Amino acid sequence: MKNKGIIIFASILVICLVLMIFLLGKNDNNNSNNENIGFYNYSELFTARDLKQKADTSNAVTYTVKDNEDITISTAGVYVITGSSSETTIYVEAGSEDKVQLVLDGLNITNKNFPCIYVKSGDKVFVTTTNDSLLTVSETFVKDDNVNTNGVIFSRSDIVLNGEAKLTINSSYNGIVSKDDLKITGGSYDITAKNNGIRANDSIAIAEATLNINSGTDGLHAENSDDDKLGYIYIADGTININTTDDGIHATSVVQINNGKINITAGEGIEGTYIQINGGDIDINATYDGINAANKSESFNTLFEMNDGTLKINVEEKDSDAIDSNGNITINGGTIDISATLSFDYVGEAKLNGGKLIINGVEVSEIPSSSK
Image (cartoon, rainbow, N blue to C red; front, top):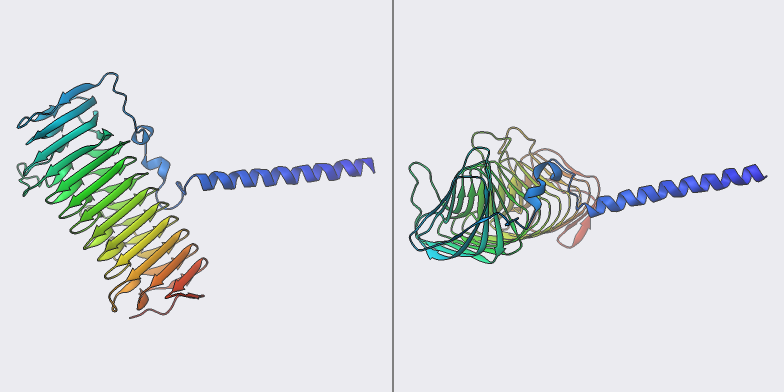
């Protein structure tokens, strides 16, 4: 009997340990904000320096801007930029392995027709806002030789925006442009632009930030005409408010949203080839389609996939769809709440494997037939 009691006690102890490990693992997953699920991986996209919001200025060089005088930075290092001026451009012309960090410390630049920050070369450039700063281009942009330098911040290299303060950008065309990868890992950004709020060739990856974008065409736009595996948008977390007349979020290839609070008022809410939502709280008010999975890239299946989170879509036009896919639709989890005359339009298959689907106030157990 004594041995039997010991065996029972040991068995109960093992079960308790297994449950504890399971629960701890579950809590760790919840705390990760869905960082490493989905097509793109958080830990592979962002380096430790990308995520560091305070610059080490112990060996920094400080520049105070002056009217009609440019600043050129040609070597790796940390540079604090402060003061107010007009007709000033901060040039970065560094080596291919150089990392340059620009620390905006209460910087205020107003130009007529050329970028306030122009990255011509360098391995990677960090723009870190330590005190609230303001950058403005008020008139029609002019070219730099054959380069359409059409953003208030214009980079031909990888660029990372971070910091602990607010950066306000006013533009007569694009707000921020990168011809390579563009990452945002912290800080607050108020962008008003007549064309795109933020545009990149290869990718836009947001770890966490507050973005308020008012634009004339797209809010976030990633497009690579040479390689359709690129041109993707990844959002790990943050608060994003977009008000635009065209697409709120537009990618050639993949749009992946893992978490965050996203509010979009636009012509179309989110457009891409493969749109994957793994979490977050997304609210779309669209004139036309709320979600549009379109055939923009041959490297990815055309698919709208919902795995978790909350997606609310309101569509104004009676002949437009809340969720439109030129391929398939798969809903595995989360909650989708649709207010629209036409709820779904798809070419392939539509599967409701889990989650909650509400259409015009009524919860349904299957995805309706295609509306067209």
